[in-house]
Length: 328
Image (cartoon, rainbow, N blue to C red; front, side, top):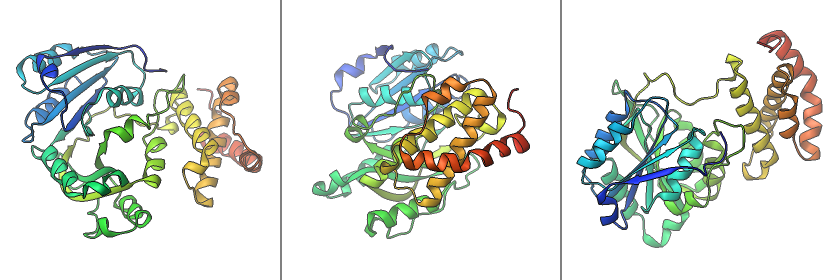
């Protein structure tokens, strides 16, 4: 865990032949030897060929080199294979964004698939936006279905791209479920994920919520991703499992957003919910003897600390009664 500074890069011969692809597809992978071929195959089948593919191995325990290198030798697409120590998917994405040469960048998980027309749809959609308006956008949002052909989110309204930015953002949120974004490379290069020491997972919302408030998203109802639910190692921080690292991840996240609250535009209710969760995670870690981590991730500002004092005792009681002593 930590900074994504140490990594090795291998490219195939086609990488040097293509200087400026239109779309960079990238896949961060940790283990997933049994599913990565499915993802690779879906990229290879793309009908739109002005793309490059970056695969970032985030310190996998299961060897995937043979699968990736075999593909690199057989494909006509430019491919880059990056190997790095395990640091979390956020650090892998950062490396991918830095290396991307495309105008747009599309991230596909290592157990999911793109439909064959996915990149073509994103290309045509982006080109349909007037050139003098593209600087207002940071992504195209599209739909997904699961492996059973069930939609994973509600359809966007037909007129979503005619709505004011803030109203459209509410409808994107109301759609819920799994969606997929094809993002502007230059925007992502300037808005990388934080890489705090000792943190194995930084939620996408840490970066995406401020971007959603600053830029517009263009919505389409085309299904371009097949989302597989069967994988057992999706990166999510389920703090209720009482896992110390996951609680650390969640505490850091709440401290980060609360200490940068002006970037997130929280309602009062959202703000208080974050304060309460911060207090709960702090109590859990202190009961596990991790007081130093709590100290390093303290809240800043008089408002944050006032509400922390208000909710500290209720949070302590909640941890004691509902979760247990937290020492296991």
